[in-house]
Image (cartoon, rainbow, N blue to C red):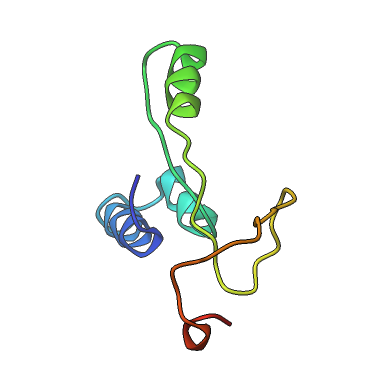
Length: 84
């Protein structure tokens, strides 16, 4: 997996070196969270391996939690000036 900017750069360079290649269309697909996997192996096996390595993303400010979160009463270890 790589950064979208790097993937677009490499695809663009490849397309410039190989004019008329259909791979130049991949550049438009590099938006959002994208990962490209090229294989000659069994696709279902590759998919199983990739799905086993999925990790949840850390929370971001202003994001809505996909599940209910309960924080029990008690000391937090922070003084009142450190809490929002």
